[in-house]
Image 1: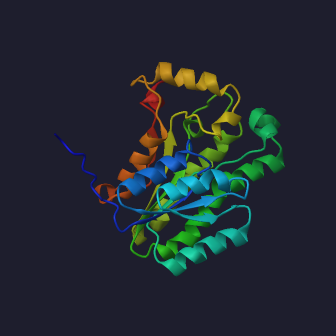
Image 2: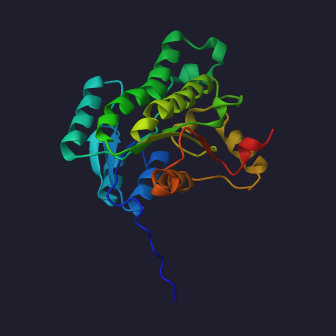
Image 3: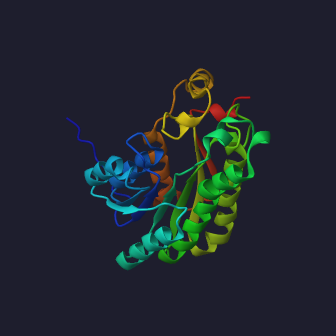
Length: 258
């Protein structure tokens, strides 16, 4: 008889995971993996409407739960002030994105200035704002993650406005990796294959995208949130302490197919 052994490689680490909406969220997969490997986890919820979906998940892993709407500067400052009072931060996961439906489902050429700026602010610049506040809490080093998609590098039909936005996010990760490397802070863009999340449901013809991924990926399987979480846990661990600035694909090899 064998017993599964969990190696607590993240014991003593503290992770802030932003973007859990429900049990299907990529951010939730990250939170589960971090907790399984011994990390203390802090989750955020967007607003009172979202809280009932996130609170039971936080309770199930003994995670602290705090409010955060990244469009409200005072909430972000309050969040990091609370974290600073409680101690250090070792891991930051930014897994949020937003674009108005009309801009997301229309062609890029038809996108509004307001919609484009809103998508860029929530999906990209908010990561920079979080990073700036997180750095003082990572005096002993740390790891930051932002969630991207292959549509940042190649044209994916119907990804539209989010393609340029995610491209900016991936570039921001590289520049942060350069700037923060001397402080022992590593930064990665994570690029999962298509996943059935609430955010993805807003994409036009998303079911066709899933089917295409399943048929074309070399491994012949779709990835899930646990795949993403396990990869992030590895990258946050001592086993990956010399890796930074990467865009890491977790897509069964789909990105290598022309």
